[in-house]
Length: 141
Image (cartoon, rainbow, N blue to C red):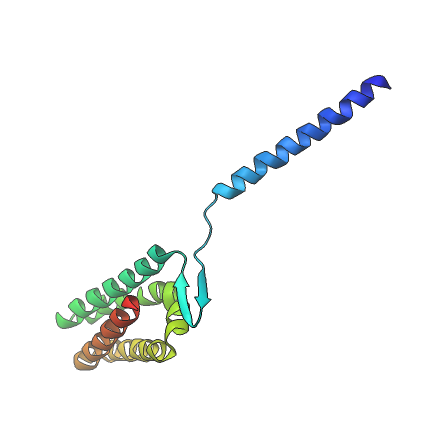
């Protein structure tokens, strides 16, 4: 019975050590990007991720534009298929920042998709230009 009295504190200390070790591992894991709204202004706590999303959008639009100008609509469609993956990363922030710009980007993306399917070079380039200017506007703000 006397030995049992000594075992209880050893077990308690061991459990606390295990809990402490687990806590330090959790603090080193990567946390997702968050945004904070203060006085109507949205501040990103991880601006690198957001800017990377805008860079990806600009790249998709540029690559699609190059393919359209060359008359290669198959390649242009392949390039523009990447738009949605890049857009998903930033669209919530854009919508929060400016619903007008968000809607303009959504409308222009729909226009580009339709123009690429119809192989309408003028409409595709017009939509891509609209996307480019709206993305540039919202990424700066």
